[in-house]
Length: 112
Image 1 (cartoon, rainbow, N blue to C red):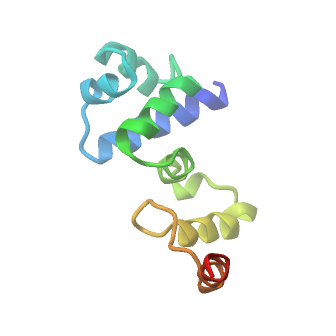
Image 2: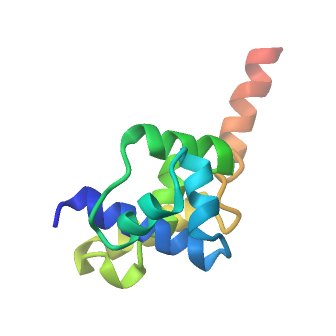
């Protein structure tokens, strides 16, 4: 099985856990329930265009969607610290965390 199929399966599983049906996921990417069912089984995979549609329609940046859809247990042990750090940076809301104070100070200085 290709990596794209695993990623696609993880995204479908994640969205289903959030309460979405296969039909609803299909509507987001412009395909029917049967196509999404095949994605869920690893027989098909999402394209970049599908992922971009999900990003736009869900209002979730693609990196956040990908990170959220990965089961923590699947992350290589050596990459766990990086994974945890990214989760902290992005916050629980699924959005990028607010700018640091230093970044805010730079913006204030430029505006002066």
